[in-house]
Amino acid sequence: MIDELKSQVEKTFGQKITRRQHAELLSQDIYLKTNILVSYNTIRRFFGMVANTTPRQTTLDVLALYCGFKDYLNFSRQFPAIDIWPKWEGLFLALNHLKLDELIAHLHIRKREHQDFAVSFALAVKELLNHQRGEEVLLLFREPDFQFDNLSFDDASQIGVILGLHFNHYDNWEIEQLLLQEKNFRDLVLKTNVDYTRFNAKYGRWINYLLTFSNLDTDTSQFIRSIKPFMYLLNCQSIPKETLAQIPPLRATQHPILYGRIFSLKIMLNQDQKNHLRLIAQMKKRLSNSPHHRAELLYVPAIHALLTQNEALSKFTLAELQEIPVAKKWYQISLIAIEKIFIAASQIKNQQYQAAKQLIASSPLEQIRFGYKQIVDLFITYFQLEIAKYDPLEPQAKKILQQQFKAKLSRVNLPMLSEGYFEGYFELNK
Image 1 (cartoon, one colour):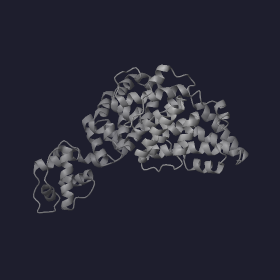
Image 2: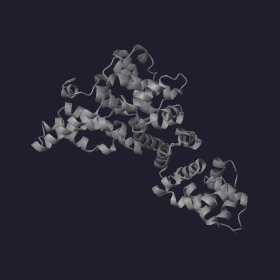
Image 3: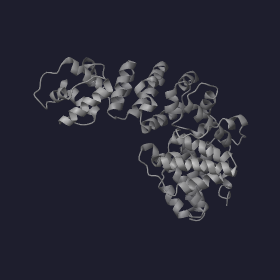
Image 4: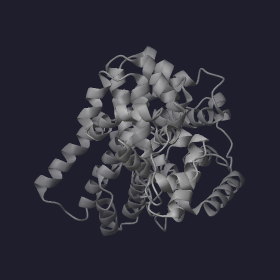
């Protein structure tokens, strides 16, 4: 079992331990993660780089702790399950009999070893909900190592997408209210997966519920107050003065996606030219200071400009997207695909049909995250029909495309997106 522990330590560390430098770095990593010092010489002996002796029990316990177990005995008992864990069926079987602390230990291992942690976490939550183990779901979201701030945004986004889909068909308002009171649930599910197509259904109900609280964390408070005005816009309703007054100010410390959301709202809802110039100057400064976050900063302005065709917002966003960002992370693929669809709309307005056709083709629907997918799919189909006026399709192909557009439009429960809206879409601002 000691050989298995060696292998597990190397997986946790992220590389083989073969040199003194490795041992020194591992010693530091162990101390950072456990607050217990294991000398590099002890590590060298353990991995056979110098004369080997039987490791002490305390050394074995610390190394097991470093790998996410309580101690060496706990590691020895659970190790056979680790080999089974990567098989997805093992997760579902384990959920039927594992205690919560054992399930959490498995998820810790997945996270440390970068083994599809996000998918594993989301599936664990889904199965616990399906088994009516709601209290354990709350504890899972409270686990310190699984907090939003301790995850990559890629992992957080994947968790949000999977669980967002699940909650569309989950119906237990009592549990949902409890979860919405958990900051980490709001960070991982509510905020990473904005679902425009559910503004008049589950997602809108969540937003309205949270608006009744006065003690939310600052980030959530700013988020819901930047979502609510757009819910009114998509429903073709006047925005109440108190809702307008609650739109947060721009802050350099805001998450780039939240910053872009607030910026686009303020541009759309304020007609004063001086305010526009001030807001644009703020956004340009943020873009300049955070060039690696261009995709995040511009994607909500792109989707809002696509939907509302606000002239000022469209002009600014199009100018900033002359150089399309390059995806470095999984979640950025969807953001950039949406930005490309927005650019394609401008190209069609300017009769650049082949360029628009190519751009749409380079942004396949499967790249769009589900919260926006239904709306973007509708626009893509509409744009293809518009391009077909100048680049004719076979009659049967065009008929099928028209049928698809009508069917997709009927499934979008948003008053703004009506037949009349699309009939005049490319006439506006000409």
